[in-house]
Amino acid sequence: AQKITQTQPGMFVQEKEAVTLDCTYDTSDPSYGLFWYKQPSSGEMIFLIYQGSYDQQNATEGRYSLNFQKARKSANLVISASQLGDSAMYFCAMREGPGGSGNTGKLIFGQGTTLQVKP
Amino acid sequence: EAQVTQNPRYLITVTGKKLTVTCSQNMNHEYMSWYRQDPGLGLRQIYYSMNVEVTDKGDVPEGYKVSRKEKRNFPLILESPSPNQTSLYFCASRAHRDRVSYEQYFGPGTRLTVT
Image 1: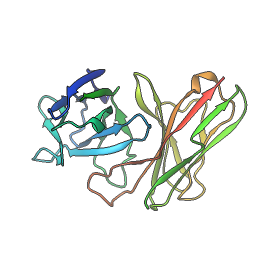
Image 2: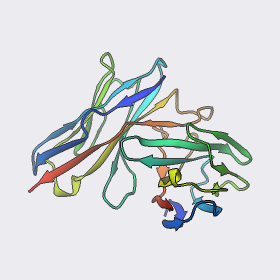
Image 3: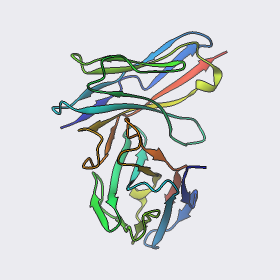
Image 4: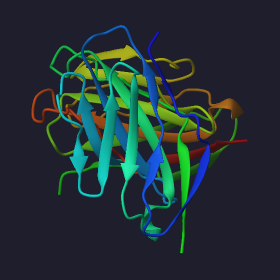
C-alpha cells in the first residue's frame, strides 16, 4: 500500500541557514506525484513544490528545492536561507498514478515535520 | 480571486447534533474532496467527488456523508457527530487538466470540537 513517512517530528534551524526535511515514500505505481505543503500556525495548507515521477530534474521554486532520489524513494525538501516566516509544519504528500481526469487525485500525507527557525 | 471557502471556520457542538460544513470553490474544478487532520496522522481523505453527482469514499468515511449537487459546492455532513470526529477538516479542489502538477487547492480549514 502507498505510504509516506516523515521521520522528523520537529526540527530547529538557525535563521539564514539551509535545512532539509526528510520524506520517504512507498508505491508500486510507476507514475506518481510528490508534493510538499506548508501549514503555518494559522492552519491553512500552502502548496510549495511538486515533483513528477518522470521528471528528469529536481523541482525548484524560489528558496524551495526538492531532492528527488527515485531509487531510494525519497523526496526531501530543502529550504535555503531560512527565514523566521518559515516556522511551520511541513507535509509531504503523494498522488499515485498520472494526474489526469481519470485519477481520483487522492493525496496520501505524511505525519508532518514541525520546523522552528531561530533568530 | 481563485479560492476554496469553508464555513464555519470554528465549531463546537455536542454529541448527536447534526451539522454541515460547507465548501465552495470558484475555479470550476471538477474534483473536490474532504480531509481530516489529526496529530501524528497527517491528513486523511474522507470523501471525494470527481464531478457533479459523482462521489465516493476515501480512507475514513465512517460517520460522514457528502453530496455534490452543484459543481462549486461539496458539503460535508455529520448526521450524528461523536467526540472522535473532533478534528481539523479541509476541503480541497483541483482541475483535471489545468496544471501539470494537478495540485490541489485547500480551503482554510474548519476546526470542529464535539463534546
